[in-house]
Amino acid sequence: MRARVLLAALVAAACGGGAPRPVELLLDEEECSLCRMAVSRRPFAAEAVTPSGAAHFFDDIGCLARWTVEQPPPSGTGLFVVDYATGEWLDATRAHYVHAERLETPMASGLAAFGSAERAKAEATGLGGRVVDWAAVVAEARP
Image (cartoon, rainbow, N blue to C red; front, side, top):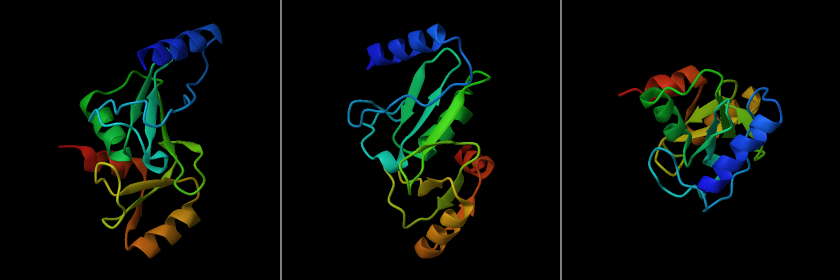
């Protein structure tokens, strides 16, 4: 795992920088940078990629949010979450989140991300939850 993170940093440096992009996640081979659980369920996975290319993986969106509160990442760090509906990576700060107690997530945050506001609203209705933005996710992660 450490070798992959180092390799990602070297590739980012060699490519001349630019905005960080998601690093491919190998399920069950990465551990959450906050809770140390294995990242095993892609629909709830998240990551932070620093400007140097260092990747931090998370098994739950709530872990990413709490990590940003407890250890604010360097300026320019990319925060990414997986779209629950499509499996694609999304910019965490632009995603639409469903917060529902009935949503069983790895660390019980009850959060799922969506690229589409309409899809998030439909899922929230079906799960008896609510739609929130990244600022609300982070605010709820504060102790």
